[in-house]
Image (tube, rainbow, N blue to C red; front, side, top):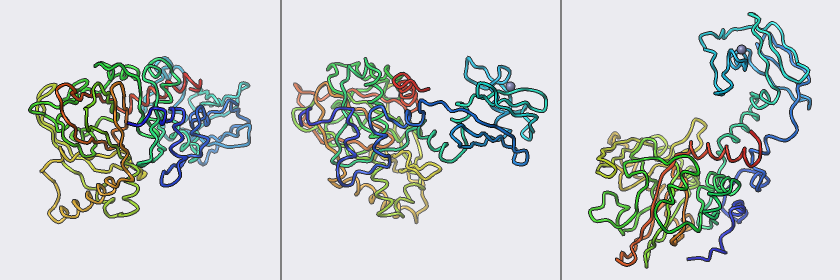
Length: 433
Ligand SMILES: [Zn+2]
C-alpha cells in the first residue's frame, strides 16, 4: 500500500480540486478553505438591520429595506402563518402551534412598523400582533439568490467530483471521536468528496458502532446493526466470499437505501482484497454528456431489485428504483446499482428491454474506465467512510488463508442523521446558528 504520508491531511480536502484535468467543482476555492465553509460565509458577523418596512397592499407583501440598501419582500399570508408569538409558536419546541385552519390565507394588514430594536412589527386586522427579528427575516428572504444560498447552507449539495487521481481526505479516528473540529472536517469532506479515510482505529470489533455513536445512531438492516464482511460458508450475500466484487451501491433492494457506509478493516488478506471506488455522480454527468439517451433511460426506468434470505431475521425484499435518481431540478441525487441483487423480474415493456441494457452498459462502461476508478488497500486499523448514495464500491478477489482471515466490520447510517450532526458541529465550531 501507499505510505500514509502521501495522503493529504483532512484539512487539505480541497487539494483534489487543485489537481489539473478532469476534476470538476463549481464552488469558488475560498469556500473550500478550513473555516470558510458556505455555512460561515453566508452568515457574516455584521448583523442585519432594518431601515424601513412597509406594506404593498396590492401585492399583499411586506417590503423591508435593509441598512445596506437591499430589499426583501414577504407575503402577508406567510408572515401570519409564521408569527413567532407564544400563542402561535411554542418556543421550547421550536414548532408552530398555530393551525392552518385558523389562518386566513387572504389576510390583510392593519399596520407595519420598525421597532426601536430593528424588528418588524405587524398588526393584523383582528389586532393580533407579530414581531419579526431582522436576522430571522433576512435568513428567510424569498429572492432566488438568498434561497439558493440558504439551501446550500442547509444541505451542502455542491460536490467535488473526482476520478482515479483522487487524494482521499484522511483524518485520525480517535481525534474525530474526541475533537469537534476534526469531526466537522470529516463530515464536510464526506459530504463534498464522498469518501474519507480514518486511520488508527483499534483492530477489534465495535469501532463502527463507536463512530456511529459520534453521529447519533446507526441504521439497522436485515444484515444486523453492524455486519462482518468475511469469507463465509453458504454465504447469504456475494460480499461474504473471497470473490471479486464489481462496483455497486449497497442495498438497492431497500427503497430507502442507506446513505452512508462505514467499513473498518480488522484483518486484511495476505494477497488481494484491494478496494475500488467510483464517483457515481461524476460518471452520471459524463454519461449525460456522452450519451444523453442512455442518461434519460436510466433516470426514467425503474429497475427491480430483490434480496431474500436470513440474517438478523428472515427477509424477502422487493424494490423498484431508478439507476440514476434526479431531483426536481434535474440534479443527480442517488445512484442505485447492484448487479448481484438486480432482479430477473424486469418490469418493462418488451421494446424497452434491449434499449435498457444498452443504457446500463453505457453507464457501466464509463465506470470501468481505468481513469475513473480509484483503487486503495485497507490495512488493519483503517476505516473508510463513504456516501453510499453516490459512490459505487467494489473489491478485488483475495486469497483466503486460515491464518489471515480478511475481516471488515461494516455499518450503515442515513444522511439525515449525518447532516444533523454536521449542522450541530458547525454551530459548535463556528458559533453560527
Ligand atoms: Zn401570533
